[in-house]
Picture 1: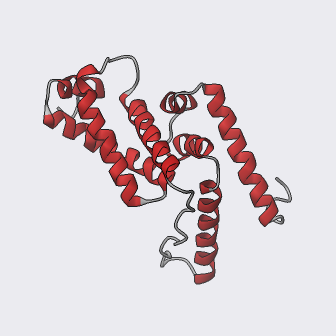
Picture 2: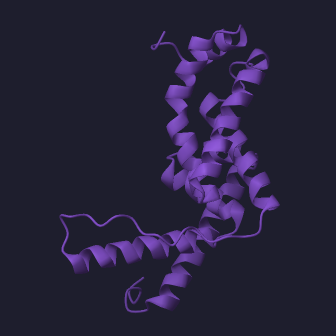
Picture 3: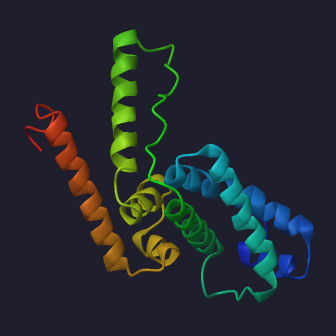
Length: 186
């Protein structure tokens, strides 16, 4: 059964096959959970949201029409919509300020620079508007094409490209303002 396509497995899930559903969860939980974590910034809330995505997969499998959308795209769309709903219901919060654990292979100053760079990037991305952050996450961190991201966000490809361009421009401006010597040639 592992060799079956997502569409074939969805047909089986639509008939109540729990093993097929478990296989789809195994295939897609990691990317969906990572996407939700990036958008929400809260691991526990992201896990709840990813679980809800797969509950909806189970509940709606019988109505799945093969060929209309890729399952992967549909899962990201559902995850995106659930995350946006959660973000709208809570006050804006920055991502956790805790950095990643230091790599024992790096010298302390290099590790500090790396951690500060990552923390700065996390904060800068977290400060982007929700739609720009979602487009950036889908395309750059999850590897979706612009067309797949557009389908997941339920917008046009041109809108995704515009969101990405604005996100990059904003990040570049923030970096230029905070660390001008790094951006002298950019």
